[in-house]
Image (cartoon, rainbow, N blue to C red; front, side):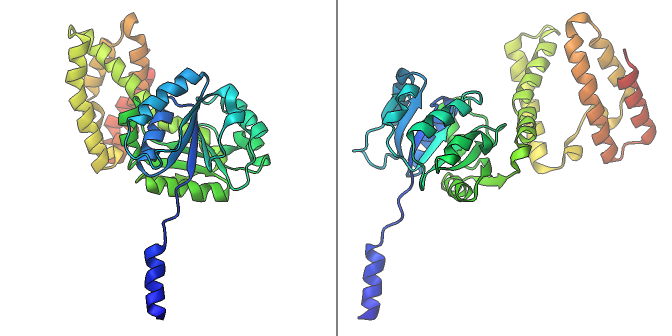
Length: 318
């Protein structure tokens, strides 16, 4: 009888329900998170935007996405002025741009009672300190930043699966954040609150600045007489092969080309080609990144004489 009782309890036990979610700021990232979380079993209760019309558009997109847990649960499209109408969801995600986060935290703190509830913002540059009004109101607070480029909600939702997430916050918030990341199939790491700005600068260097660098390279190729659309198509496979190399080896091992070989004469020709006034910006960027490439070439074991000539060429060239 005892063993029968155990079997019955296993059959009737139910998995713990996922937290209910409110998303403030349903832009590209907010919508991508809503789609990904809903597909992972989370109930999205409300979407809050500056204007309720924005929230309604996001609701329409979410309605066509898979994984709705409770079809009877209405998703409320709310404007930021309607925060007093928010349902008491377990989790609030603030996915606005950085500047409005503090104002949003103050508004939420007026209307919300935080016992047992959590609030995260998705800023890469700010720590959970900006959510201090909510912490004082009893919420667990933290930051949850997906280290992935989201340019469109649906493809962004797919990119969120398996992504790295930078987490920071109080102990209870971090526990919840790690569970969310696990449910999204991602990997998490934590940093000190005071390191958030430097962390985010690194992310900007690796992604948005990479886009800016690629755009500059296409302009340079276009100056050779290739139209810009073709220039993009020509250069993209080169970028993709470089990323593949970076995925398989260290930075110094992945370095190829002029600086890896120590081709001083070729670097001089590059500088001559970039000396026109219309390419002044490209010239400065080339020299700065060239100096970094010299350091990588040094780690590769490039001849010390070639390294010295390269460095002199980049630093002494007017």
